[in-house]
Every structure is written in C-alpha cells, then in structure tokens.
Image (cartoon, rainbow, N blue to C red; front, side, top):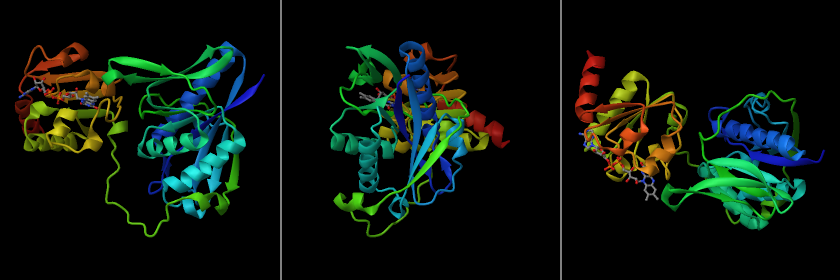
Length: 336
Ligand SMILES: Cc1cc2nc3c(=O)[nH]c(=O)nc-3n(C[C@H](O)[C@H](O)[C@H](O)COP(=O)(O)OP(=O)(O)OC[C@H]3O[C@@H](n4cnc5c(N)ncnc54)[C@H](O)[C@@H]3O)c2cc1C
C-alpha cells in the first residue's frame, strides 16, 4: 500500500510545558483521515507531529498517545520565542524537503498567522477555520475535503485544494481527542540558521505580555453572558458567579461589542468554538453565528426573558426569567 503523509503543526505552551489541546485534536483528526484512507481507498497516511522549539521539556509521549506515528522536532535557539518569520521559513523548508500531502494547523492566533505565510510561499491552497475534514475522490485523485461555515454561517463550503500540500487551519474544540497509543519515532533536526536569512523580521527585545491563557475552551461548565445582561457591572456579577462555582466565563458578540467582556472570550463564528459538558447562556438571543460556536455542548441551558427567543429552539433546558435577577439570587445563595 502507498504511504502518504499528514503533518500536524503542534503548538506548545512554553511557560506550562504542555502542548495545546488543539494539537491532540488535530492528531486525532489526522488519524481518522488515515483510517478512512485505508478503509475506503486502500492506502495509508502516516501521521507526523511537527514541533519547533529550542529545547523542549514537554512530554513527547503525549503526542504518541494521540496518534503521532513520527515526531519531527526542529530545534534551534531562534524558536525560543514564537516569531512568524523564523517559524514559517523553517516550515517551508521542511515541507519542500519532506513533501507532505496534507498539513493541518490549529486555527489559533499562531496557526492563523503561520498557515497563510507558508501556503503563499509554497503557492498552494489553504482552507481556513475548518469545522470538518474528510477525504473524497475527485478525478481519480483522493483529496482532502475541508469544510467551513460561509455566508455568515448559513451555508457550509467544502473546499478541495488542487496542489499539495493541501493545508487547513482547524478550529479548536471541533474534533474530540482520541487515544491511539502509537509506537512513535522521533527525529530531532538541528535547524540550520541559513533558512532564517530571508526573514525580514529581527527580534530586538522580548517583552512578555501579562496575559492570562484563556481556559474556557477546555472547561466542563461555561457560563456565557449576552447583551441581555445590559451592563458591564451585571456581566461582572456573572464572572463572580463563575469564579464561585468553578465555571469558566464566555460572552456573545453582543456582549463583547457593548464592552462588557473582552473579545478573547467570545464564542461563535468569529470567536472560539467550545464543547463543554454544560453551557449556560444568560441573555443570549441564539443567533446562528453564536450557535455555531457552542452547538457541540453536551447540555445547553438558556436563560432569557423572551419566551420566543431563538435560543429556546436550540437548548435542552429553558428558563424564562430575568437573567440579572437569577444571577443575583444564585450569588446570594452561594455567598450565604
Ligand atoms: C459574520 C458574523 C459573525 C458573527 N460572529 C459572532 C460570534 O462569533 N459570536 C456571537 O455571539 N455573535 C456573532 N455575530 C453576531 C450575531 O449575529 C448576534 O448579533 C449576536 O450573537 C447577538 O448577541 P446577543 O445574543 O448577546 O445579543 P442580542 O441578539 O441583542 O440578544 C439579547 C438577548 O437577551 C435577551 N434579554 C434581554 N434582557 C434580558 C433579561 N433581563 N434577562 C434575560 N434575557 C434578556 C433578549 O430577549 C435577547 O434574546 C456575528 C455576526 C456576523 C454577521
């Protein structure tokens, strides 16, 4: 059987010595594609995890656990801090050399920056922000069918790329992490400095931002506040309730646009995709653009004072009530 290659560009949280969950999700997705290739088209994809760093402390076994058959570790001091030019120069050279058929990136800040830089250098196609991946036969070729919401989320577009590598960025939280426990080969490549010569960016100084890594993507219970909360102070009460109950906090775009919450906790088409055990929406109308980011939640509870709010068509439990009053009562109960 022919052996083709899927590369997953992994992201590593340097300050925490762990890989981002999206790396495991993509390895699992790559393995599902590999299984489909074997069952339907009688060929194999080998799944590679690609890691760039200067000396990594994270556990590579985790990559094997989620299905990396081979890890290619590019090592260079220049990878100590993320720099899109250094990373993209190195990855372009790697892809030219190893010729992967498919490359998957997380649709994270890093992936959304790196993937277009690389695909434009390689003059190949990129499907951004995908929510589904499969293989299809097209004119005697087996192609990656990468699907993503389009026209404001009312349609799904499935896009095939003419050239290899066929590249896609995939939203966080869309694919489940699945354990495969592969026997993994690790190749450490000392990245030579010559590839960085073309980089137009020189790092003069590194100033770390005091930003807290958002945790709500992996939270079990999320409390989401919408524009129906009406004020920033009311949104802060929901934040307090989330803290007291150990839940994560999220916001609709309506709430973000009103300045109640920062954009990095927005859920929906232009925000994050989440799939918690329980999602409780307070004062959220349930627009399609919001639903597309949370519809994979196990149980959805909606609190809205309008009995005809669209979110009530898309939830498991509806509470017709004033969301702010309910939050006040819950806070009083927990603080008592
Ligand atoms: C291309 C595009 C991308 C988008 N991306 C996103 C996205 O990523 N995420 C996102 O969320 N939206 C997104 N939107 C916007 C989306 O269409 C909606 O406008 C937005 O989700 C509305 O936010 P909301 O539900 O908080 O506000 P509203 O639609 O104004 O709803 C407020 C709700 O609160 C209820 N309410 C009012 N007072 C109370 C009260 N006291 N108690 C209880 N309920 C109350 C109302 O009945 C209403 O249902 C996008 C739009 C476009 C065009």
